[in-house]
Amino acid sequence: MTSFDHDDEDAPPVVVRDKRRLDPVTGELREVVGAAAPAAPPARAAADEAAGPADDGIPPAAELVADLQRLSAEYANYRRRVERDRLASAELATAAVLMALLPVLDDVDRARQHDDLSGAFAAVAEQLAGTLTKVGLTAFGEVGDGFDPTRHEAVMHSTSPDVGTATCVQVMRRGYALGERLLRPALVAVAEPAHQPTEPPATDPPATAPAQPVPAEAD
Image (cartoon, rainbow, N blue to C red; front, side, top):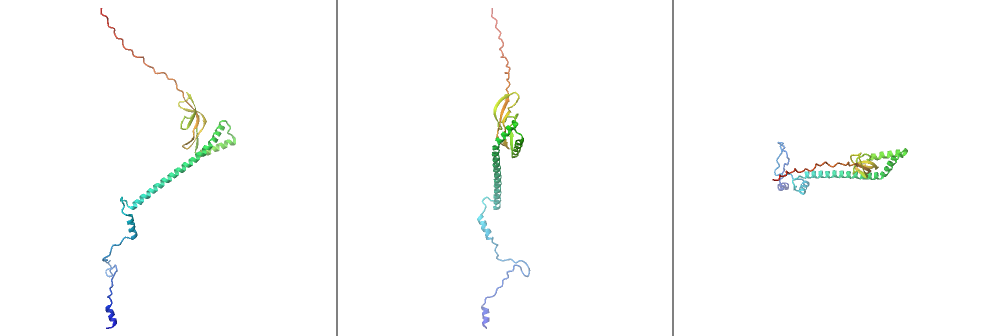
């Protein structure tokens, strides 16, 4: 026996394992003996462990949706509040400017009452009044208006049989408002209806008791 033959006898036998999933003869899928179920990905398993079971039974996705809806509602409320504050600040600034211009408008009214509003001055006054009206300024207080204590300030009182309710009979200074905001009340003289004397109600004479018969004296 040669040395070559001796080495072949001592070598371990060659084992060939067929790991093909499909049978080359039948073409069917082979069953894998001893195969373990696939393990979950490590990243997902770690996330599940960190999240833990929900205490109230709400799935994590529903919790995220609820948080998103709450944040969306809070942001919408914030935007409305900011817009409301912006409009209020703009109205306050406009009211401050108009209050500074009210003495000028009073001078224009006095000039109009004395027929001194003419020429270029009249054109400027009309343009100023039109511009302030576009901003939202409204004037009130005319003779014949009903007295409103929330818009009129009475500086004179009188009585008159020609009015049925408290009425403004004279306007010393017109009032102004910006939208629903009162800038200045109107100064007016108020006439109230005169009280007519009323006759006292007729009263019936007191009832008298019937006369009692006088008994006859015995002889």
